[in-house]
Length: 310
Image 1 (cartoon, rainbow, N blue to C red):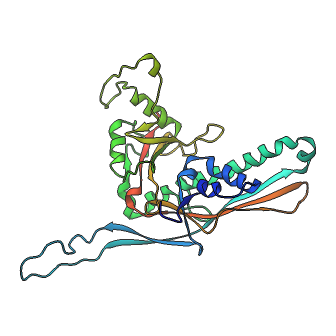
Image 2 (cartoon, rainbow, N blue to C red; image 1 turned 60 degrees about the horizontal axis):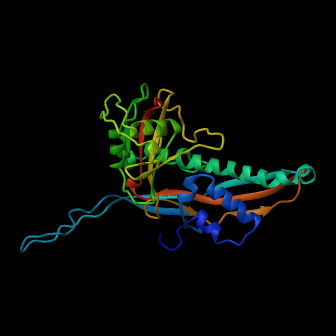
Image 3 (cartoon, one colour; image 1 turned 120 degrees about the vertical axis):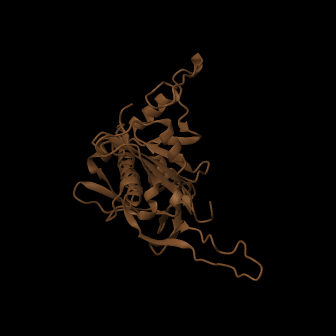
């Protein structure tokens, strides 16, 4: 990645060892999107960028003798996003220091993970305001991203996921090894496992694969070489909605990260500040001034109305 674009995990690795660094490291490693998202420095807090819609395809290239070059301007769309404030307070009851001091690190870790959960969800389904403008919002409401959605069902009837759908999804995006990921719910993952086994399913190619005993039940965890990330929290609950469409559908997202693709930006590295004691608690403030930007049309795509049927 270009200089200045680092993931939060890479930033945390360069910081001196301390409780504050441990909090940032926990936040950065709780969910895979936070480990993959590059962060561009944006000290002013507002990130502006252009999305290329169409090349100036008649600019030069060839001309006739005694003819002139024909030039057109690039077709671009200008975007701007302000930073959002993520994090919160980590609250520890004073009684733990006396009764169960060994529980304090676990409490700090758990509260930090809960904050990472909120950021990860908002990265996909945030609706602006105090939260991020999520990938879903771009795909739902921005005309230049309208062709990045493939509906395999309707709002009244979800479609059962097939391999053809996955192939169509991948055709919508620029693939970069190590930076492109498929994000889905546990229902979609189980369906992909079924498809990988070669089980004959309606409307899909009926084929059967023979595995040796050592391979029985294995799953590559990828589709066409692209890693599949099932977004679930510590309880095993899906972070992506499973009640889309008719109430029993999910969405599969495809994202390619990069400073000129789908990226994050931050005003500065996360700030950890111990606060004064209040009531019966000790507080630590964790704040991250951060935002996201979709810099290329073919950096995000989705399959919508995917039935939760396995």
